[in-house]
Structure formats: C-alpha cells, structure tokens
Image (tube, rainbow, N blue to C red; front, side, top):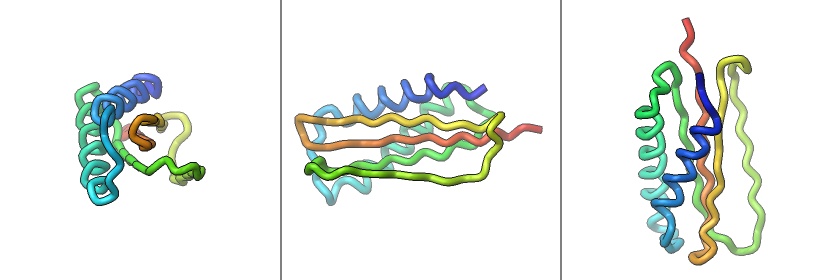
Length: 108
C-alpha cells in the first residue's frame, strides 16, 4: 500500500540534502528540477512501490515576497491512488522548492 507519510519523508530528505546550500540561479534551475525529480522517483522505486505508477513534479522558485498557488487535477481511484508532497524553504539562499508525488495503483 502507498504510504504518504513515508513518501513525504523521502521527498523532504532528498530536498534537504540536495538544496541545503543552493543559490537560486534561474539558468540552473531547469536541470536541477529534472535531477531532483529523477532522484525522488528512483528512491521511491527502491522503497518497493512496484504496483504504482509515480508522477514526480518538482518546482523551484525564488523567494521575493510573492505568494505561490499550485493546483493539480487528475482522474484516479480514491481507494487505491494517493499523493504526497513537501515544501522545502531555503531561507539562507532565498529559494523555495515544492516536491510532489502522485501515485496510481496498477491493480488487477
């Protein structure tokens, strides 16, 4: 079964490890978000969620006093599918990051 709390802890640990001292440089963020998404997805596969199709999304932005709203829509089965997310704020380098994982079960 998909455990949102386990996935959230995994996402948080990766974001904290990889972004602890990262400076927000707009030109470098596309590659960093791709790398973080792949790292999270690979780590979750190691956790044994074999029956789930994972969609991992990472958004990195600069903290400049503005707010951010994010939304997602998808079709899924509320009994078997789930999601987890975490927000990492890097106060010392003015960077915020949101990591999300949506999991759809391949049930037979």
